[in-house]
Length: 77
Image 1 (cartoon, one colour):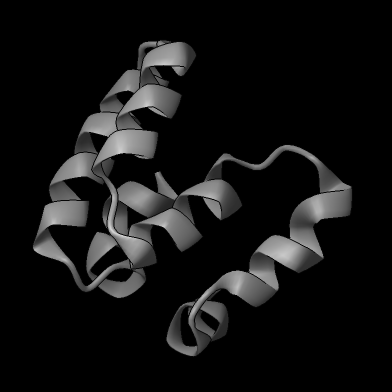
Image 2: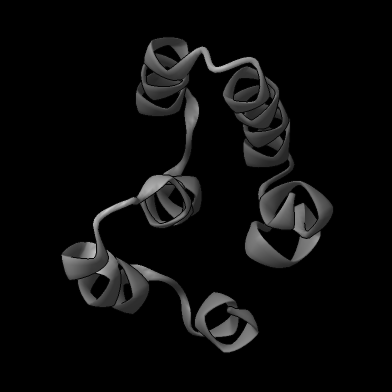
């Protein structure tokens, strides 16, 4: 929900917004394999920084993924 409601803050690219909307819809339907494939082939540089952060479920990777985010996104998070 965080990503869906805040795409305008997390991403500047309208193309990435559209991809993230599709990703979120697939997450909601538990179509995880489809999500990874969609993200891998469709996102631009900024989306490729945000997606791993939002999809992460490994606490040990949090800091590294957080540091990869742009400064405005880190400030928001």
